[in-house]
Every structure is written in C-alpha cells, then in structure tokens.
Image (cartoon, rainbow, N blue to C red; front, side):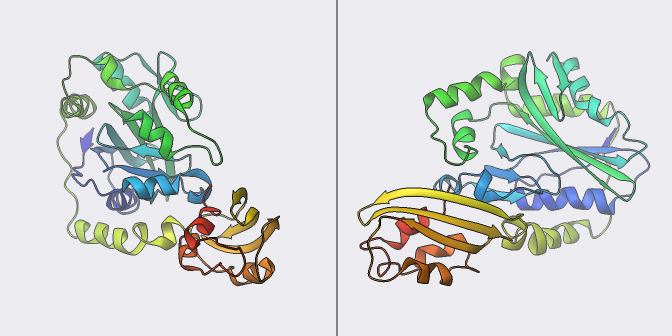
Length: 315
C-alpha cells in the first residue's frame, strides 16, 4: 500500500490533513499514513466537549482540544500514542479494517478486531478507530497505544460528575493495553513505527501530495479545525445540572448549551444574595461558559467570586 507523509504534530492541522486526504485525493488504490499529535483530546463529530471532557484539567495541563470529522468517542493522544489513517474508494477499502490488526499480528501482537470499532490484545483495548464516507470514498483512522500515560488519559476523559481516584485509574489500566508490553524487541515508539510502516507499505513507495496541498491543509486548519466555532460551537444541544455548596449557601444550576453557548439557565438553592438570581439567569443566554469568569455575580450570591461561579458550569 502506498503512503503519504504527515510529519505535523499539531492536532488541528492533522484533523485538516485527514479531511484533505478524504475529500481532495482521488487515487485508484488506498493509501495510508502514520502520524502523531502533541498531547491532546480529540472529540468525535457529534460530542459536546462540556459533557465529555474534563476541560479544567485540559486547561491546567496545556492539553489541546480538537474535534475530528468522524463519530465515536473522545480519545486522548500524547507522545506515547501513534495514529494511522487509511483512505481510498469504498470498493478498494473492502479489507481496510483488517490491515492494521494483520500488521500487528505479523509483528508479534495477538491483535484482533472486536465489537464496533476496537482492536484488542488478549481482551484489552490497544486501539479504537472511526470512519467517514464521502462521495464514494472512505477514510478510517485510529489510535495505537504504545506507552500512553494512563493517569493523564483517565483524568482528561473522566465521566462528568465522577470522582477519578486510584481505583478508577487501576480499572482503566486493566481494560487497556500499551503495545510496548507486547513488543519488547522494539526499543522505542519510533522503532515500532518504522516496523509497522514497513508492514503496511509492503515495499510500496510514497504517494506525493498534489501541488497546493500544504496551502489547502493550512487553510482548513485556520478556517475550520482550529476555530472555536468548530471545536465548541459544533456541539449538539445538551442539558446539565450541578449542585455545589459555597459560603453564600448551596447553589444548584440547571442550564442548556446550544452550539457551545448558554441557552437556558436557572438557579435553585438556599443561597443568599441582594438581587434575585433569576435576573442574572436572564442575562446569561448567548454567553460562552468560559466567559463566565468575567461576570460580576456578587450582587446575586454573597461573597461568591466569578471564578467559583464559573466552576458551576464545568462538569
């Protein structure tokens, strides 16, 4: 199988590269490419980052958030993760889902496809993949965990409202597999990458990108995949509820998000303030959750800081 070269580690540019490869390349046979992202969380096309991702943790750790063009769930990428994409006409992609598991088995990993979109090793997940169809073409892309930081993965993708503790992390460890543990003959991810690349290419050479490809990929990164409107604003509508105790009393907030902004807000609780909270609730629709840190709420909740108030809108 011929291959493309993608040396970028920018998550937004790599999402643009995938879209370009699917929409703009019309090659007779499938091509593949291996790539990496800097530490990031990649959410599925139909997911809300506010409901699926630990956004305060991402901000604290400098982890990038990106949205891909395929469905499925959120995934965590770091320097211990390798990604693959395969693109081609639907007819030519008939056995594309088997190519990566077959290559892993040839390297010595007892890998097998399982369920909807997983690759397992002895019952433990080492890869998840997703697909997209467009105008008679198909793209599949997925992750390969080589030596991923499980603690960070768990914190970044914690279930909203849950408390992630040592037991939770241990549970995740028992369900996922780092391929490094099954391939001691490869001293590094780079060595594994080279071996996998050789298996998938089977002696075929590179496929050059057409003239103007870099400029178009950069345009897609700038105008689509790197923009708030795509990453947050593309999110479907969702409803949320959170209850928290402060010095002013207990505040329970119910709110809805549409296209990444607040649409309906209401407050319940035994909190004390000088002005009715309904007045504040009426001012919030149309605001992005991250903008709440600049809202003056002292008149509605005695002694409550804007930062603590904003935390009510973080799952």
